[in-house]
Image 1 (cartoon, rainbow, N blue to C red):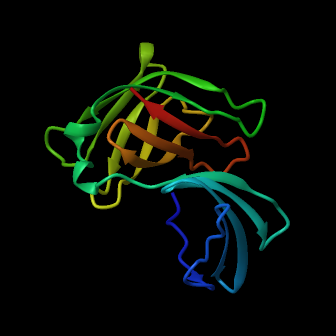
Image 2 (image 1 turned 90 degrees about the horizontal axis):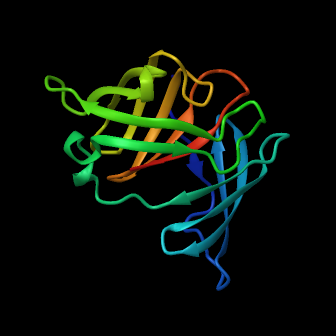
Length: 175
């Protein structure tokens, strides 16, 4: 799995208009990406990529809760996972309930399984950032065997496929 890209924010501080609109420009590896942000609440909004390459991307963003809550005792249990808008028709819109079981020997890691063992694997995360990775040892999650996830608050996790294929999805997991 790749590591997050780092870049330079070109226009700090970001100015937000009274209607919640802002523009963010970031340079990564000599390529400038421009995003329009639409804030719809404190620490929450939508994002639209408007430049940097030949594609247009959109998504959402939300603030994370206190990272002191990012540990296995807070995220253990059963979750349902689903996408709101699959990228392709071949990507399923839901998944069987997924159970996270913390490791008893390694902090901030564990195993996961879906109903009837359709998907099993392992996960680990950085408790200081809430970013983690998971790898399915059998089956797939939204047609991916590798997943990147972010803990937003305990009991709300965002997942993204990390396989190098076009059948990707972004999903939410909640108990």
